[in-house]
Length: 407
Image 1 (spheres, rainbow, N blue to C red):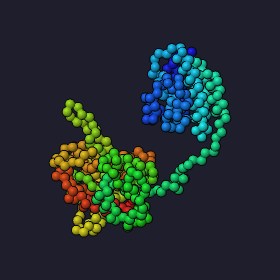
Image 2: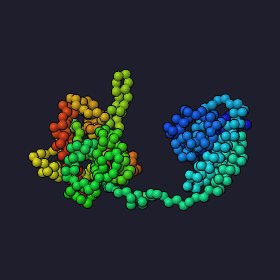
Image 3: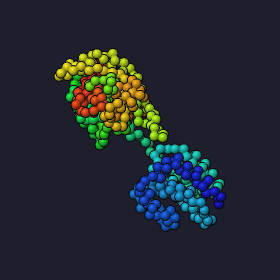
Image 4: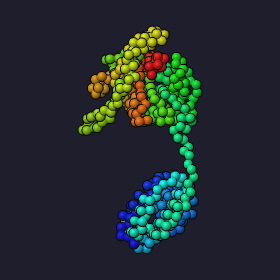
């Protein structure tokens, strides 16, 4: 027999997890099953017909029970000789059955040499029988593999999944996306259970197909998830986020456009003895599109003025934007809490950091990003009076970039 059951079971459990059996340790169905049936009852009364009580395929049930039984025994400290013998017999019986189930499901030929070596070692320790190993070897040798054709390789994805070089994401459908769509044509809605996705183009450049999307809820967690999903599914090369923000009360006017060269958060940190010490998370936006927009700054300003019914003139800045989790309407807040962390900050909003961070992490960082937002308030005595105007100036800036093939 064996002296330390845990030392023997640990490597066995490890071997099975390498075969991806660990997946079966999860699941509410099995947790509920264990609550109703003691592990000893599985051994004593049920064996294979017990699996019918769990709502999964036969092989899944077997593996789940086996792995959970291993973990159950790993947590048990004392065994009688009779219990050890019963346990050994059942481990061998179930291991043979489970491996047969596993091989039925397995469609890709693998090298099971390491597994056999591990089992040989466990045989020396008294847990696995020679006959068990022989039956497993026999199962491996008799397995017939069909030629597997990948359901969707990269080329198939190219053919079956429409791609977009550009995506425009807004935090809000109202105003922010509305102003974009005023100068765009929507060709079709893309089926998606979570988000409103549409494909189309700007009226002044129909050659560039764009994916238009807006968040369901504000905030940079939602913006990050939406951005990552779009990048992953459509392999977008450039994501643009237009919209509105709060401006630095000392440096901006309503409708001014801020093209972010950096985004940073301000509300992460540590509270010690009543004091909050900020820990800034930041991402720089340094690609060549920023310089291209700078080179066309005056043309964009003129285009916005000429497009507006009252010929209003705004300015364009290329500066940092802060990202927070809350709406700000407090006198002095911007200077005390944002400018104190970055004196160059010109705006504050709730989504940009999530978008930029997602582009850094998804698609190996190959997707570029532009944050182009306009001032709707100055974070003091907050109101929506200039929201439509700010949405307009932001949208017309983005439209100009496509019209002139800057992006």
